[in-house]
Length: 330
Image (cartoon, rainbow, N blue to C red; front, side, top):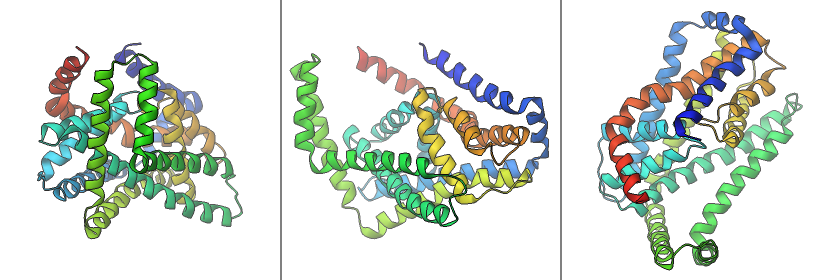
């Protein structure tokens, strides 16, 4: 199925599922949201992008590569757009690596930068999940979060385990990967090329992990700031609609639906995110309020990524990335 067909299905699912729950009354409830709140929500997203851009600059600066805030912000916005517009977010990493490579980094080192950021994200979500578990279960588990906590713990643990294997046992990974590539008919020249890339990637990871402790701490604090901003938007939206739900539970809901939603393989996890959101909050919100909250939240944390990031992506990466992919395929 062509990309544009998947993208259109994702957009339709994102609109039709909330309407199926709340009907047109859900749209009318959107008028109860103050304009200032939505502007503030979008501003929180932009601030989060700037925090990520500062994080990228710190990572690159630790390796002797300089990048201005504007270019770093364009890299982040382009990557976020590509992640939001492609199935399972696959375009995000590709765009990130391409733009850093064009800035002068070897592609393996650019991939190592991306892997370091993903590692720090996982190292944020793991303690966050533990703290959420304590807070929610200590309150009597009125939200019945056992299943969500177990699944999220498994996914985060699996992600950390995979990165650990790539870093600590890369020879075994390379041997197993080489046998698999040989079995599926990949030419030996191509296998050697992949092996050399993995070795350079591991060296790049080692270089990133040798950054000073203070630099790594500051990068991690920026990571925390970004995710707290993004995951607090829903709480403000629901409060503005006159409802009260635990911030901790809403944080968990977002972690769960944004992770599991990617299984739909539609851009932005559309369909899965909306269904999961509705299932987990239906007991606390009436249908119209649920639909309004879902539409407003998805606009701020998904459609805004497409609207604001799209022009930046096409200006900074679009044509060059398309040519690069065509050359690689050829």
